[in-house]
Amino acid sequence: MSRKQRLELTWIGKRDRPRLEPRILVEDAALSHHVKERVTEDDIFDNRLIYGDNLLALKALEQEFSGAVKCIYIDPPFNTKQAYDHYDDGLEHTIWLSLIRDRIELLHSLLARDGSFFVHIDDNELGYLIALIDEIFGRSNRVSIITFKQSSASGPKAINPGIVTTNNFILYYVKDKDFWEPNRVFTAAARDDRYSKYIANFEDAFQDWQLITLRKAFLASEKLSSWTEGKRKYEDEIDDRLDAFVLDHAERVVRTARVAPKDVNENARQALQSSIKKPGKVFRSDRQGRDSYFFLNGEQLVFYKTKTRMIDGVTTTTAPLTNLWDDLLSNNLHAEGGVAFPNGKKPEALLKRIIELATDEGDLVLDSFAGSGTTGAVAHKLRRRWIMIELGEHCLTHIVPRLNRVIDGDDKSGVSKAVRWTGGGGFRFLRLAPPLL
Image (cartoon, rainbow, N blue to C red):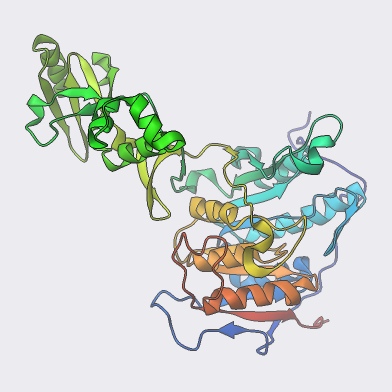
């Protein structure tokens, strides 16, 4: 094989390229919307909603925004060969590939060197799309293929023959992994029942700490004589009460763990050996900038507080984010944003996760298949700058009213409560001007 050759996906018409006539973007002030007065000093006003063909609009953005976008999320038509209320999803396969390729190439040019790119897709075109994006971004810049559980195998789906489809996929790429620095994101998790011990005298000097069972400590706090009595009193709520007790006392709920001397530093090894020689006594080894080690009877004390974090203002047990997202089902998705968009709307919680994973406040987020406007609505509530592009008439009937409610503080749905959103900022409504040539 020649060195100039490379592995690539080919199709009829791949070499055909559209002729893009230069366009400029013109503001329609009647549809732009801003609050009259700042709500906070962090209000962002220069967001952009573009009404028109996304290929032409992306080309028009190149001069100002090339290499400037920190996060791109797109939810393109899945090419399922079906027609929906607001768009037709039945292109011939090779035409779909060409249309997607042309747009992803422009999106790649707009993405910052440390930027992230997310594509939402189902399994119909999944394999082809992976090969296509690998060719544009480079396979080495593929971060993950995320499985997103969007529904359950219930209702009408449950009677489908064969396997019931409940999942979509999110392809996660970056512009350049050498410059990529993702934020750490955690998800809520069930209580870890390995943490079954409790420091009864936590207020005393650590050397004298005494461990009792977690259940004994909980029963004492509830003035209960036994777990059976607790079940009679609280019935199905007793486990929830125990969970709450653990979170309220996470600094003194612990488990013991065997640790090999080779896995800790020299100072910690000495404390570990001392705990073996003097059973019943707790020994500590301090670490600069990190939590101290504690050892008892040759084992490490691991504290439950290391498993807890604040998520949306609530302290909860957490686990690191994985590539299986099965916790974002929204029972009220149809009502989010105050707009109906059957078979197309994604949960605000999903976009919140993606935006928090890939950006910080003030960063620029782009969505060139805006649909019902979820990306811009969530980016706005998270105080990120945003650009959205939509060709369909629902840009006027759905997105504009939805964003107006967000800006005015009237949208209480979606992630509004979690992020304490009360309104502010604004956006400019832009149209593609007639061709210059």
